[in-house]
Image (cartoon, rainbow, N blue to C red; front, side, top):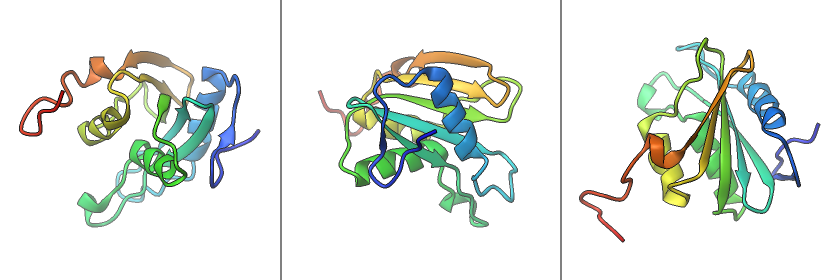
Amino acid sequence: MLRGAEFGAIFNQVTDNELLKIAKSVAQRAYAPYSKFLVGAALVTKDGRVFEGCNVENISFGLTICAERNAVFAAVAAGCREFAKIVIATDTQEPASPCGACRQVLAEFDPDMEVILGTFRGNTIAYRLSELLPRPCTGILDRP
């Protein structure tokens, strides 16, 4: 199976199940020696490219980077800024939601993007980012 590479693999009609497999696979490469909480993400651009991300922990926990932000930053570094959806996989009983920081970073690019949360066992639930983070631009940095 193709995986997102330096500039992202092109997927014309990749299914959500295939994206979940990608997210699970990249989660296995996560660096999580402290929490043991493996997370993988497959971020799909509007032109069909898929970028992977996994969480990378640090003993100074504030320096830890989440899978979702890792995928976004890889996509932006490759020149992509328009995202259609993200699929996030965790080894939990129920699908786990992205943290607040990841929600805010995703909202920077598309406040209504599709977010599919999945487990290694295949349980999934889908949301719009706007359901998980309403009013992302409201507050001190208000903008239209």
